[in-house]
Image (tube, rainbow, N blue to C red; front, side):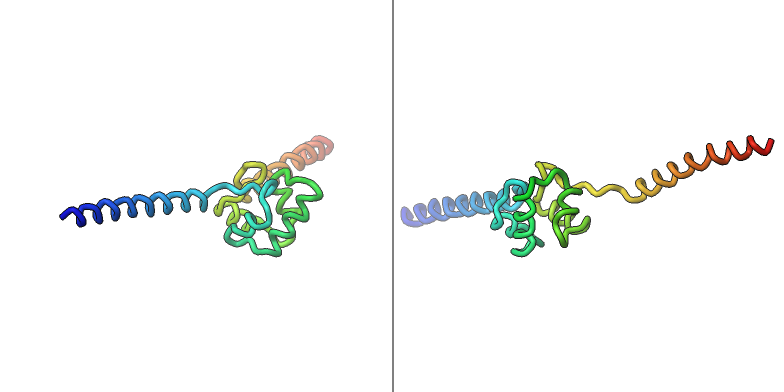
Amino acid sequence: MTSLNLFSREFSMFKKLLAFLAAMSLTAAFAAVDINKASEAELDGIKGVGPATSQRIVAERKKSEFKSWDDFIARVKGVGEKNAAKFSAEGMTVAGAPYQAENKTDAKTAKKDEKAIAVKPAASAASAAKN
């Protein structure tokens, strides 16, 4: 009975160790990777970022740090809004910030509103000239 007790304790300790290691790997998997500080290997570890992209990121970063996601997208060939969103979901940050896509419908509406405001004064002036 004593050897069974010893085996049970060892097995319990083993399960706790496995649980701890699993928790640590999950924490590491979701750790943020700032592109201004990460090595090529760390960047390559992000799902969707391959060796070529990580090399382009590091090469651009040597010129100057990335100020924002827009700066990152503009400077790194092959990275657009969709990839930026995917990379951010995998833990990539720029200057500590995750990617937040601008709502394009809001931007289009704002441009239409600006155009409408710009046209109204001109139309008012033409109408006043007729009277």
